[in-house]
Image 1 (cartoon, rainbow, N blue to C red):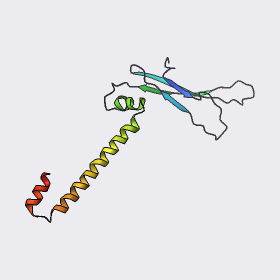
Image 2 (image 1 turned 30 degrees about the horizontal axis):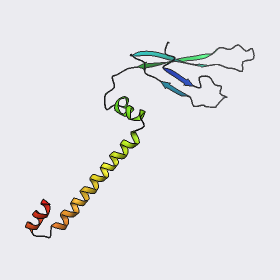
Image 3 (image 1 turned 135 degrees about the horizontal axis):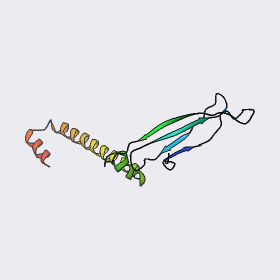
Image 4 (image 1 turned 45 degrees about the vertical axis):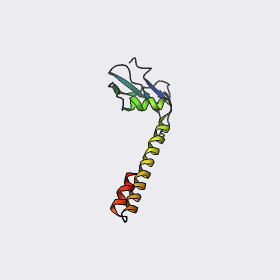
Length: 129
């Protein structure tokens, strides 16, 4: 269908014994525009005594709907971070900032609890520092 560079299957040929299964990886690369393609799966009896056999096949439709990437989509900013290997660093910064905010919240809450037994004037003075 003209999309050989957009669809790859590894391995693209293999044999199976009865009852056997195999994992097959299929990679789809989005083309430049919306399009439709078909993937053909063909099963053939390779043990036919004459060497000639009829193959059974099925065509599976594959539809490509192309949308413009946004800054927050996986194909936008996240893909940019992944391409440069910065996702672990960004996650680390976010976790570190979250931990800092949590620690600050706990500190301020404990400080306020310690000040409750003091006179109001001293509480105001210490809160202004």
